[in-house]
Amino acid sequence: MTEHDLFSRMSRREALTLAGATGVAALWPRRLAALSRALGSSPLRVNGARLNDRLGTLSVFGKNPQGGVTRLAYSDADAQAREWALTLMRDAGLQVEIDAAGNLIGRRAGSDAARKPILFGSHIDSVPEGGNYDGDVGSLSAIEVAQTLQENRTVTRHPLEVVIFQNEEGGLIGSRAISGEFEAKELSLVSRSGKTIGEGIAFLGGDLAKLESVKRKKGDIAAYIELHIEQGGILDATKTDIGVVEGIVGINWWDVTIEGFANHAGTTPMDHRQDAMLAAARFTIAVNRIVTSVPGRQVGTVGRITALPGAPNVIPGKVVLSLELRDLDAAKIHTLFDRIVTESKKIGAENGTTFSFIETNVNIPAPTDPRVRAVIDRSARDLGLSTRAMPSGAGHDAQDMTRLGPVGMIFVPSVNGISHSPKEFSRPRDIENGANVLLQTVLTLDAEME
Ligand SMILES: [Zn+2]
Image 1 (cartoon, rainbow, N blue to C red):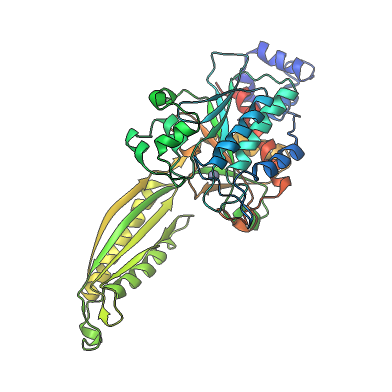
Image 2: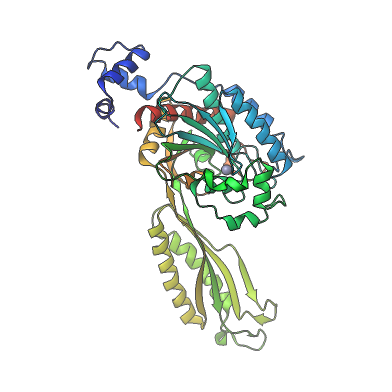
């Protein structure tokens, strides 16, 4: 947005009030540039020491002897950590509620109650033997932002909501309950804690009878912002401070079955074989070649393989393997898949095998909002931080929020790109930077968005 656009979207009275509030002499229109700068970057900063200290405290809940945590959703450690987070949210002046789906929501009134809320947050459950940063950084930073606003008596126009979603790692349960994607039949699925999803929601203080009440519809939120560790190594390797997430990639899975002919491995000559394993090997190489043959950051993986009958002295007559493709652009995924199918026919014709594909899972890509991306980028640069636009190869609660309104995600570096591991680490300075970008982004969106 240019300065001109910014000003033209405000009434003159609003602009003068803001100019007065920021101490800029209201000399319309000569002070336009100064006013815009004042609006674009608030002098407020989070308390980085407090934030990093709290990350240390959170790491005690579910602590493992080898480092890191196992804080599975619906476990005692999860419930205790949520109880502790709830206290922090109250201390930050938020009106806290556990919604019917078990999400923690802390509300802060805006000056205009008619506006839709700006949401920000993340999750604090972990994978088995996970680290101390995935989800935790975004959750505690969101609370820190609320506390900073409270301490500085800053009132936003929009109501704000800090959200700590429940069970992100076990299928984005809390965020999907809010976005309307969660289905009642999932309540009986057993989570990694041993409790069913339904038992888990009740355990965290949710109310299964009122589960429907947490659903929101498109337009019910002004925006959702999530700060998260990158969980990959790009920011660390390129020494970039902040990742501006372009979207959460789409993920497509197929089961690929290759039929050949099982026969004696000793007596069947090499030129008389219909070897499904050989076809699978050529297929795996072809997937890699096709995925890397076009520019972009798409990825393709053959990650699981079963050869039948599975004996050293039998030529495999059948192979079942998995194919996974990920990209921000669903059309690109389909183009690549079509080329892979064409190639598989060629491989099959050459060695007497047939390929069949069954789609087993589709997660459609969830692009972030270009306006929110621009605000994140500008907020970071105003703080003197370097930025880089990038996709998220991992899933996040943010992808569900894209169904309700504009979404943005802020990444901070993961040292050596390690995540879902006790070795997961993000530097205190990077975490503080990320929280300040979150703060500035919330304030700028509050000033600029409807
Ligand atoms: Zn996460």
